[in-house]
Image 1 (cartoon, rainbow, N blue to C red):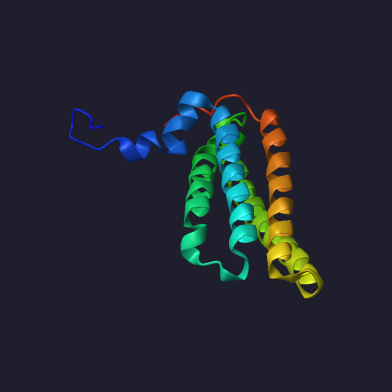
Image 2: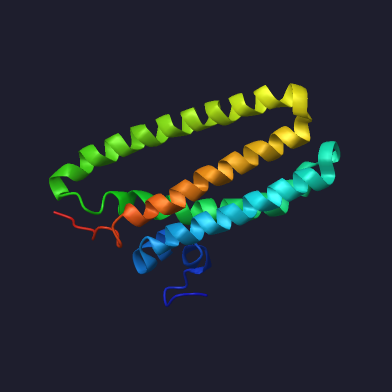
Length: 159
């Protein structure tokens, strides 16, 4: 798909940045659903291949999860900040960025702790699958939380 200026639109059409303004928070629900499918694929792949698992075995489900993640994170800030006044957006964006970093660090720590607590008794395969299920549970909570966000992203305003 090429626009009148000869620019390839395919990457933009498939991104959450392009879909966000058109679909609003529905793109987040779609992204979380696609990400969930990717995680279910990872769970199955780990169980199927076990310790013989290679990076190539995980590539299809990782690709699906990555597409879902792209749909989520591109429009996320615009939707979360949609109800703020122009004078509050800078502060809100800074707080949101700090909380996103903190949440990511806590998430890695919690999932890593669960994995390393389980691996001595359950083994690598079962521990990995358990961590994937915990991740899916977190994404299910995120799916429900998206309903609390504004329906549409804030309009761009340049002064």
